[in-house]
Length: 367
Image (cartoon, rainbow, N blue to C red; front, side):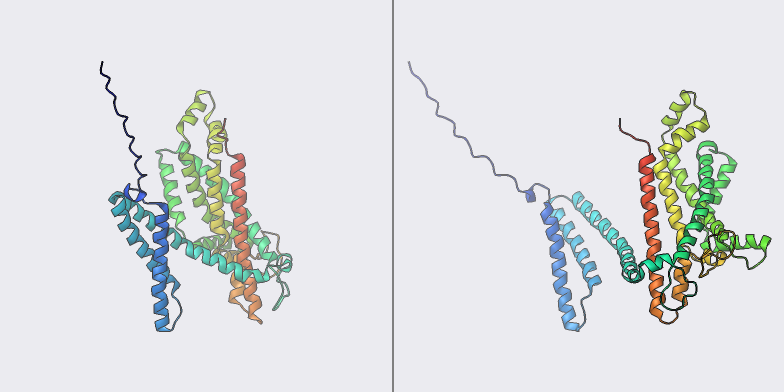
């Protein structure tokens, strides 16, 4: 009997792991390396140019040319290693990121400039005193802060209910009606009204009843309300349209009246977006200067009455301190920058409060 012995098969060595450069996937380190190399190469070029001309380094030109070089290199390398579709995707991603950075430059620059210049007068005296009988150094903006809060608050009380009810009518009741089309047209027209026109409208309206030369804080509230209403209407309308119709139909199926469905279902569901739109409208008008200069005027004294006498606001305070500089001029400029910084902080606090309110009162989606 013959036994055939089969030799054992030799196991082949496992193949080496594929390289990311040959599998159609560009490593993340390579992308950052291309960006760093572009910055380094263009930095050398601009340093040589600066030394040759005897001037300073052109930071803006360096960053712009580095970005252009990076886009060219990332597109070329990605097209070779990956595919043309992926290369176009990386190119568009780089263009979008560059556009975002360019858009952020003015915002960061303005914020930094206001903080650096306004911190000099950001003290207790600035927030606890007015400019009454103050010439030169000292004084504060308490009267302007109070005026801004009162006038803007009154404008919000006027415009928010009108805007909400108009938006509810357009979405829930006015579909296809001629009145709804007319309201939509007027809202679109009011959105583009210059702020000075709103101020002239409020001044002309009150001048008909009280005579020319009238100035009071409530006039400023009316002017700001004219500017706020279209923003509230348009933002609230868009948020109400995002509420699924299934929620309305489920409420109707349970026998709930339409008005109660709107109050208990539609508005709470869209509360977060509505709050954001309201805060956008407040931020839109709180920094207006021209309409308040015409309607509320300016004063150096405290005034808590919206219906009597002139009332100072932070935008007008900043403008008057910068435009009417006395001796020493630095004191007036410091107060102007501090007023601008205070206005930015007020807007920031209002937005934080709006986000907190939206988070607390918005409907919970978890089970």
